Length: 214
Image (cartoon, rainbow, N blue to C red; front, side):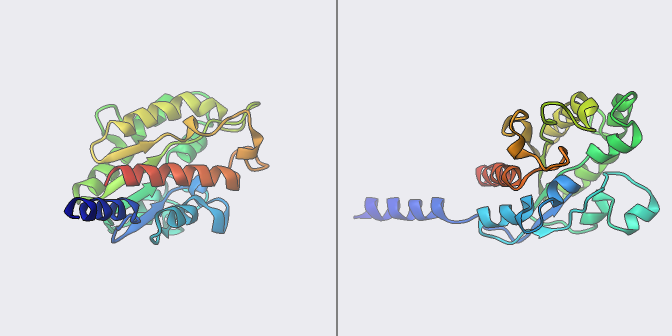
């Protein structure tokens, strides 16, 4: 009887939704896209807890004063809040704006995040995780077959992802492993943003990573 009760308790614990005081989503249009079917909205349903989505299309990790005032600086989206969990995207628009995904993007990667964890992105994440927040960074899917405006940044975004993955307190969730670039059902008509199907897949990846971290 005792063994059976313990097994029942364990099964209920494993089946229970993730319990967190706060989950905040920040980032750019990959996170923001699809409205009520966006990644944060679907993540909330996957986990059974609220997700405070602050992401905005066009956001960058590091941007100017006026864009910051409009919520387009990803660091400012979080501000001084330190929730239990942050889920985020970031870096794609920084490269797209500053090097056009052509030449010089390796230097832009270094400005965002150096190999030893420095740079604007590194300083931000170091500050966030120092207060006990778990950070889950969603990596970017690859462009669809035939390419898009970010095709020239693939290698640089992978390099950025590798550096993010090495940071203490940060979990990289690699979307490119789950999104087939040859299947256009994963992409919006603009060939850059995710379809609802892709947002669902990426939300599930984040949910699984968060559950695995318990």
